[in-house]
Amino acid sequence: MRTAFLMAAFFALGSCLQPLRASSPDDKSPDQQAIDDLEARASQAQPRDQCFLYAQLVHQMTELSVKQYAAGNVEAANSLLRKIQTFAQKIHLSLANNDKRLKNAEILLNHTAFRLNEMLHATDFQDRPLVQQTLAQVNQAQSEAMMDVFKK
Image 1: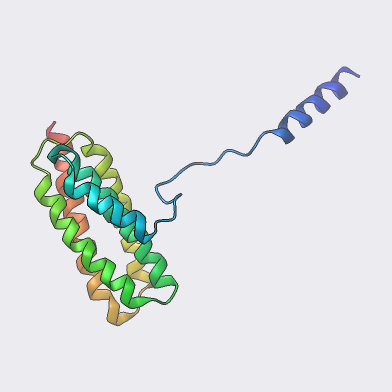
Image 2: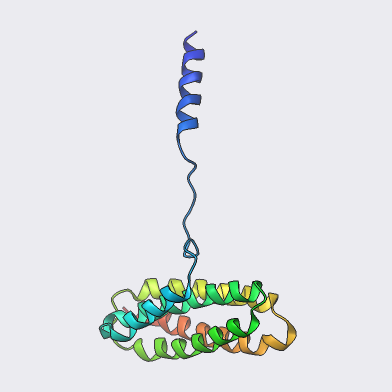
């Protein structure tokens, strides 16, 4: 009788709890308005905050580009990839400014490079050079951020 009660209590408690799941940087679906807001915030931020904000911007633009490409909007995806290259260069330039969240920026850039690599394998042959160039620039920014993390 006691085990039946414990089993019933365990079952009732288990059915009330929501399942746990891991969160990832891809949980939020980026949109153009959020990207524009983040771009404005990054350009006006203090130099110590810019690297992380640019890394967030590059990550969100990559996610939106992947979604645009999957939806068949190749021109919009390619336009975002060109912008990503510009912001990857800004990350490179902002690394020397003793950033507050450099490790977080490096992690975001690592995940962004992973997503770009996935995109590279999914793109058509004629679109691959742009994705490869973007991936190379993000990889370079990620490597430089990682080296700066280990310097500290």
